[in-house]
Length: 489
Ligand SMILES: Cc1cc2nc3c(=O)[nH]c(=O)nc-3n(C[C@H](O)[C@H](O)[C@H](O)COP(=O)(O)OP(=O)(O)OC[C@H]3O[C@@H](n4cnc5c(N)ncnc54)[C@H](O)[C@@H]3O)c2cc1C
Image (cartoon, rainbow, N blue to C red):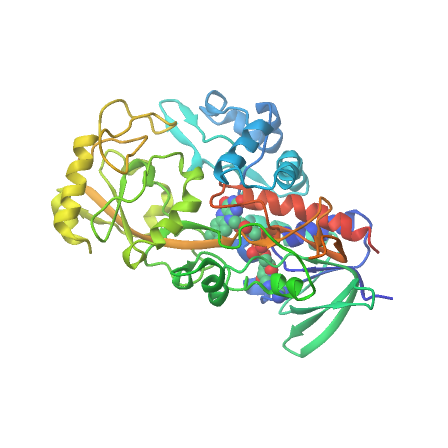
């Protein structure tokens, strides 16, 4: 008899959703193997902002998840439904039509239900006010679908998952990194080799769920699959997601799927450490650029900062910043908008000055060009009314790149600048899965006994990403993988 009914590799959102789901589907002996120590457990999930994008057709549905929201002044007037069609349209738009429609449909169709599942298990939810709500007059305006997060963000979500997993009788083993999948003579996965401080050992199970993240923390794989300069990118989250699960699965013939040259990366504080810090989690993010301009070291603008709400641009702008000279850019704001900057900007002190020329003189940029760029921007901007709560159409006239929304002039001192770089969040390339989260092999047939979820699922994201989808996708496929794996014993 196998040691376990279900072995889950990892202890982030996807892994613990799979573990709990497996128990609820009848698996009696479920173990989650976590490579990290107890003190550094939880993967990227711990570092996350806890934002959860889900479809809802009626605001009353949303209130099932965050009942207190009804009493928040200005909430009911500013919130709009986010039907499944709108979520799908966002998926399609963000991925340039390349998302796998079946996978996207699974995520979208289950998104509300899975967040309710989390909430019903005691993961408290709250409005993501400091992240996405913008107060305009007496109304709080929201980017569609990005409204709710786990209380205490990723830290709360991760702690909640460990509590729920323990309450459900899931055994969690720390410092237990899986290194290899074991198969029987027929090719069925029947266990793993695990490395602990005591050495290598084998653990057998009727099914194995790989939920151990992407390859974002693996410098060699970044160089190999993403190319230069991704090898020198800072990692926003855990240092443990080294592509171990992908390597183990590929070694037994799993089918690579999705965009292996793509990843999620965001503008972060240029001075951020090489890997995520647990006391800082995602506070290094710098996502208020739609209200200002960004210049590189050559003194040039290089993106349309107001192309869309930040939740539709941040995951690709990180990579674009990384590709600027020395992988550095400066976000510049004037005092008309500094009150709109996300609170996490307060974790660093900006460069400040009373004139734009003095500000530029304090930055590590080509001065004449930077002054010309900002003067040209100011001449092109300010032709209309500014509304921070929606795409206001306040666009520049006659400059390249344009700024399509929120293009106010930079004219009110003091001026501030924040240095940013591109930080990698997670890799997009993963494995091909069935609708039951079975891992598909290069013969296009499921590999018996092997399931996956979370960042390891390939095919959902290409080029860009609608903010708040990673955790929901992980919970959806985790829940499916756990139930499917439980059926295998
Ligand atoms: C700073 C930051 C902010 C983010 N904010 C958001 C947000 O607000 N909303 C959103 O939707 N997404 C967000 N994301 C993305 C999201 O957090 C991740 O995509 C998601 O948490 C991934 O879940 P996962 O379970 O697949 O992986 P993880 O949570 O990374 O878990 C992987 C687990 O596997 C373990 N592991 C690795 N290798 C092995 C091995 N060989 N053996 C055993 N265990 C192993 C790791 O230690 C870890 O426990 C953010 C990510 C970061 C880094």
